[in-house]
Image (cartoon, rainbow over all chains, first blue to last red):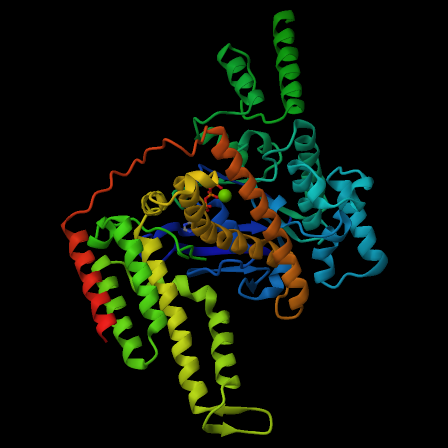
Length: 277
Length: 257
Ligand SMILES: Nc1ncnc2c1ncn2[C@@H]1O[C@H](COP(=O)(O)OP(=O)(O)OP(=O)(O)O)[C@@H](O)[C@H]1O
Ligand SMILES: [Mg+2]
């Protein structure tokens, strides 16, 4: 049970003077239940790559399968939900409620089950129940993004793929979104997130893929990623590095404040024991 | 997934380097000729001219095919209307429909006319940058006494060229939107009514917002419609004079014919 991407290459405007090699021989897999972070500079092919994952773009060469099923098969769209970049543009319902219904009802959900799914989705993204009767066009840009996210969550996918879901949100909503993602992740859904805020997502991720000019530049665990690059580290990790340089015996592959707290208190304790003994 | 619909493709051919006014004038003449083309010989002549122009501008035919492709439905409807509703010598008839010879000829010619109209327009927009089209239209409109109506020739030119380039932008938005709704399980074949709503409502709202944004962006860069100069120094060169000469020949020929 996984998404397998094998030797995928893709050209935009193939065979014209504007030809653009957007993906070059990309291979990786996303296991069921895995949290994958995809990064890379602007124009490196991230959006192009994830449009392949539910078959919006058919691979020009190579193959992609979801749980063994080719992505050319439309059935994969109920398994892999994709939230596009700038998702606020896709809203159309008369009310927020109606809009969120669109996805799940397309896959045959009806009645009470549908209503419950929509309410749950709204709660997951932290929107007030009150907005469900409003017109989506009366909301702010950030709120519209949350509604679009709820619309995708309500489809109850196996793989949730998102293109820069946190951009343009306020700190509180970002935090809520991240904790929602880890909640969904722990309930067994695979999460694939494209983001420029790598540091923010590293603690949650299990696999990191960095694209560069359409090729895979790095693939590995978050810890391997921290070891491999000189790019900006999460604040807590650079603090641990500094402590280590100052002579504290602490690990510097720490990603979360909780781990750092444990590590520092252990180091302090052993140092105290040494001084006493 | 290609975004070549009516958009500018940079290049360095003779056609790219012609003065925008020459090209706009050429498009006008071509349109008039196309509308007068009433037989297959004429259409063939127009096709020949078009092929020569493509060879000269050194862009693959693909760019132009892409510009015509989104309109296929329109062409088909146009063709069918002519085919089914023209009276004449029947070549096929059943209980429901009668197809006449005249209908077939008329339908084919009319459809070809529209296709060539679109192709020639695409020839202008693919070889001329938006700002040059604006500059060209502006020069054309300058002699008109627009001042007394409270607008300047630059305003009009700006509006025209912006509407031309809104088309590829809307097309781009439309494709993005289609992808988003397909991801949410939209099935266009199974539920076409829902599909039309799910695609057109956001498209309109995106376009209105985009127009407002452009207006604000122009405003915030202190746009003034009078006393503007253009980055493009326009001047007619040898090739332009050759074209103008050809245009005059063409007009004389048409009058005499
Ligand atoms: N519709 C298109 N037509 C032609 N070229 C395109 C198209 N979409 C993207 N490209 C090109 O393909 C490359 C990869 O684009 P893509 O959108 O996948 O980048 P990205 O990594 O998502 O960037 P960002 O971080 O800005 O979203 C870019 O260089 C872009 O110019
Ligand atoms: Mg992108």
